[in-house]
Structure formats: C-alpha cells, structure tokens
Image 1 (tube, rainbow, N blue to C red):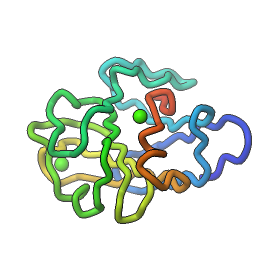
Image 2 (image 1 turned 45 degrees about the horizontal axis):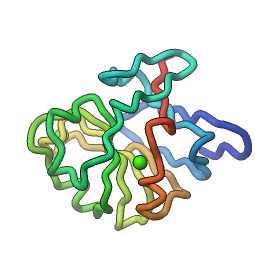
Image 3 (image 1 turned 180 degrees about the vertical axis):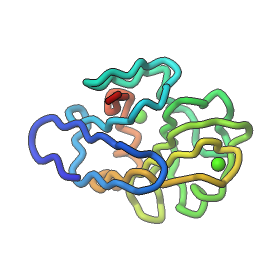
Amino acid sequence: MTGNGGSDQFRLAEFYNKTDTIKDFSKGSDKVGLNEFDFTNTTQTQAGTTLASTDYVENLTGITQMSSSEDKKLVELQTSVSGTQIASQTSSSAAEAYVLVHNSTTNKAEIWYDSDWSGTGNRSHILTLDNIVDLSGLIGMSNTDFVEYSF
Ligand SMILES: [Ca+2]
Ligand SMILES: [Ca+2]
C-alpha cells in the first residue's frame, strides 16, 4: 500500500493469513488501522479510534518478557529481534496481542499477531512498514500511530 501525500489510514482487514506492506508510512500523520480487535481500553468506531496509550506497551525488550498483562494490547519491543526469534520465542503466559518489532533479519519494522504468544503456533506476520528501517525509527512510534476501526 502507498499513501502518497496527506494523512492516510492504512486499514488491515485481516490479521491472520497474509502480510501487507506499507511503503511510505508517515509517523504523526498516517495511521495503521486494526480491525475490531477488542483492545482492553479502546472502543472501535467506523471512523477509527486512536489506540489508548494504556493499550500500547513500550517497556518490554523481548517476547519472553510478555505475559497475560499484554493480552489484548499492542507491544512495541524496545530491542531488535531476529526473524528466527520472532517465530520461536514464547511469552511466559497466554496473551493474544500484536507485536511491533524491528526485525534485525529484514531490517524493517513489522507487526506480528498471535492469538496466544505462549505457543509458537498460529503466529503470523501481518504488516511490514517498509520505510521504518531501524530500531530508533520503530521506537519513535506510539499509540497515536494506530486506530481501531469497525465496519
Ligand atoms: Ca501461538
Ligand atoms: Ca514508542
């Protein structure tokens, strides 16, 4: 997907079976739209509701640090993780969550989803942010870069 100029809302319709790519995400003006995930503290709307800061986790450095506290949230990992680690690491207890990570193998920001991070099954790479190519770029993202929308 390419938004070009202006403020765009890039809406992901499906979170389980394919990988979308945003070519030109602009922090602070564009938004990534996540569909009816039932975030803990965010109520989705058709126009898209900014993700609550309390649904955005920015203090963990690895998937192994995740626990049920991250259930129904979006986790921005504070260290780079390899593609192998993303696929193989598990959380300490069950959590259904999105993970925003700088993948040191692809050198891109990516979003992964798992309905239960305590097991490696059902894990999927749903989004690549093609122009966010280092860890500092990823850490510069925040809850306001995301909305939860309904149809
Ligand atoms: Ca799993
Ligand atoms: Ca951040």
